[in-house]
Amino acid sequence: MTIRLSSSLSHAFRPNIDAMAGYVPGEQPKPGTHILKLNTNENPYPPSPAAIAILRNIDGESLRRYPDPYANEFRQATSEALGVPADWIIVGNGSDDVLNVVIRACADLERRVVYPMPTYVLYRTLTELQPAETVEIPYGEDYRLPIAELIAANGAVTFIASPNSPSGHGVPIADLRQLAAGVSGILVIDEAYVDFAEETALPLVTEFENVIVSRTLSKGYSLAGLRLGFGVANPKLLSGLFKVKDSYNIDAIACAVGAAAMRDQAYKNECAEKVKASRAKLAIDLKQLGCRIWDSQTNFLLAQPPGSAEQIYLGLKEWGILVRYFKQPGLEDKLRITIGTDAQNQMLLEALLHLV
Ligand SMILES: *Cc1c(COP(=O)(O)O)cnc(C)c1O
Image 1 (cartoon, rainbow, N blue to C red):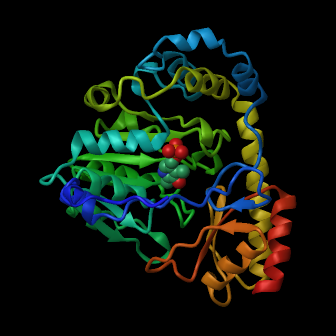
Image 2: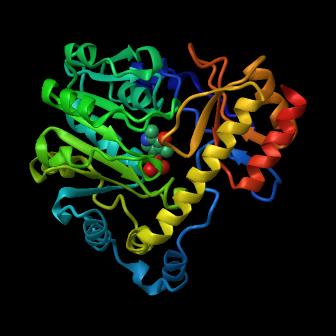
Image 3: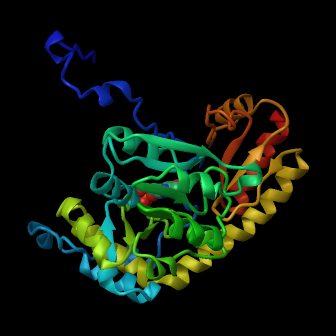
């Protein structure tokens, strides 16, 4: 089908929308195709059986009503799992939604958004949409956080993904504390990968009124398709964010299934331990193939292969294996590889043997 834009639509969009590229999500193969997907950091293990049992028992009649705008059942389960009060939690349609709500509440043309590079590309997309100005500050050698530069950039919002993507490194809590104390705006600590990490910055939300920690059920809890994430911050900060978020951003199914997943921390931790063990093994095997590997606190590895990363990415695709390749300064020679099961990682290694 071809879509013809009539000339009357030439001024339909705001200038920032015309100028921006739009976020490019990782490829999602059609259902039924036999592809090994190691490109968007999904969990290779299924969601908690307790969560799936709740899903099977959803009463269709209950969907006639609008869902709870605060997702209190989910907030209560999360409160108990994390040991934070329920009214310190804001729920989002994926944690992307929480990040978007922060930008909509806090940034505009006079109030800029600051983050180190490379990091999660969506921070730029959401800021361009607002629109607001972005200040991108390069990470130092070995991904040391450029604290002084980040503070000097004076963001209304500063984003730090920790652990970071695509580098995989965790930012030391002492560095985050220094940043939280130094910035005058909001500090968002994006903990999408915390379930695979050794530490969390969550205690900073009680130390600093300007800190919000965001989490997701997409990675550690194997529920990327459910679209559920949340932020933790003091209620004063959340009160502004509640004005901005859609009233019904969390559907009733996500609320109930997500609550069951949060109550089953043991299952989530068991899967995360398996992923971490596979990560250690895969790192050794990739090094043996001649790749440079960075220490990872996530469910992926950043690998610098010998030879062209782009050619290897394309070669793997022909083998039916998707990994993530970013054609971006500093990343053109690297691949981001999601940790699969040991059997899946073995398939990757066999394919790589033919390609590197
Ligand atoms: C995956 C990811 C997210 C998005 O999570 P959703 O809850 O699925 O929206 C946020 N931040 C980072 C750094 C991620 O890698």
